[in-house]
Image (cartoon, rainbow, N blue to C red; front, side):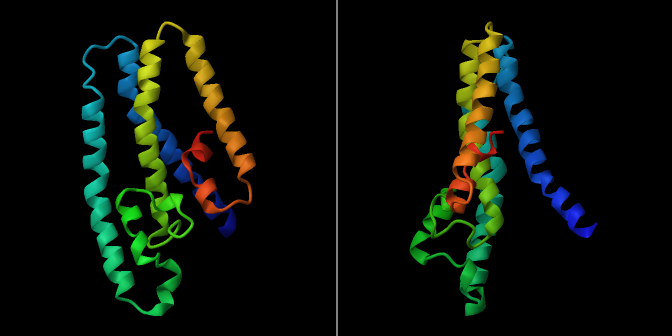
Length: 170
């Protein structure tokens, strides 16, 4: 029962992504529905940066200080020092030398940031096609199919491919 409970708790990550998607996308849906009180993409980006970057940079610098001043027992989590810049631009999951290193849980932030960048494009597209529900449905079906195809294609590949945004689309 212990293994079953903890296996089921891993679903919380995916539920977090779904809830985040809903909450982030709501203003774009309102805009697509004709709501003129929409604040704009610039405000959306600023809110996302303020929400994530300060705490992430604080924890990132803390992890760098703690792990690089520690012993060699932690070597499996240490990325090459020359690649640390990737962590500061949310790019650590896109390199085999840095994926799941330093603080392995930050792969979720990389996906979240990629999603944050993707949402305005979907929102703008939906706003322009708001009278055509079929196009919106087609977009959802296409993104789901792309996600399933991506997961099938990358099955067994490195974490660089498996932990990318397309794998989270379904």
